[in-house]
Image (cartoon, rainbow, N blue to C red):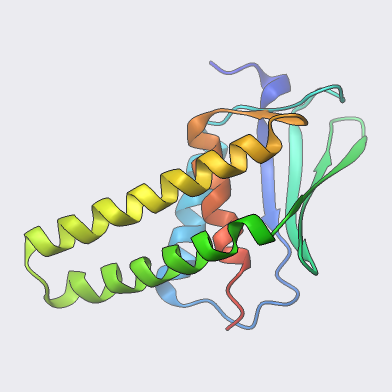
Length: 157
């Protein structure tokens, strides 16, 4: 069992600027949120203890994690979006190929595309974890799910 003071117990995306999500994207968001809340490790370094409530948003070219604690403490963790841009673009392209392939492609083709998709996802999660490491401690699976949600934030319609 994970220490309750090192967990996210609620996570939301700021959807104010998002026009719409496709059925596939909404499904990915729901799965990432569900899996993240089921099992995660998240802890502010040199900050207050959790459990945490997190709102992910974009402010211009900055990713913002608005983190709240049990006694209404707040911290804002910001990251530049630029280092993620090409990775997110490539991830969207391969996800689109994957969703198209599952309708008509052979199982071996689907598997090859999925391996590429997972590789890009792992790369994005590693980059996110590295960029957070001075301020937030996360495990690999939490970083993967957060990267999925960061990608969802970049969809503008």
